[in-house]
Image 1 (cartoon, rainbow, N blue to C red):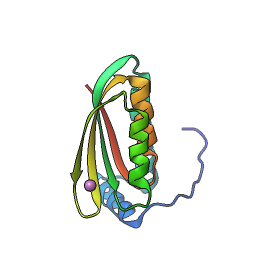
Image 2: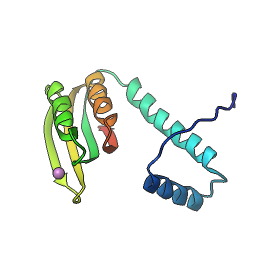
Image 3: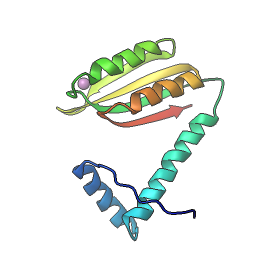
Amino acid sequence: MGKLERVCISIPSDLLAEFDDAIMKMGYPNRSKAVQDAMKSFLAEFKELKALSGEASGAIIMLYVHRKPGLVQELLEIQHEHDELIVATMHVHLTEEECLEVITVRGDVARIRSLANALRTRKGVRALKVVIV
Ligand code: NI
């Protein structure tokens, strides 16, 4: 392991509580080790998608909070900017607060990656998964 860095980050308290509960059940000795492992998983997913090239088909599954001001408009703009990829979308009003969207895609992997990253980095998007088949 290289030099250690201390960082200070903001995390919603409900997310932190859920994370703490999960890592305790998994037997992690502390948060630091669990966060390091979570970061490694995040990077592995990023690298896996980055290593792909050419044409592909798949789906982007996204969970977001629809009441966040401007978010729905922003997500729509991003999808329209990638309209050549999108085959179909399915929108589910999951709860009073959350929407689940499945965006089926077909086309250039670099563009699929661009679409997924543009969506996932918006505040209010709680989860996003890319599945390439
Ligand atoms: Ni909805």
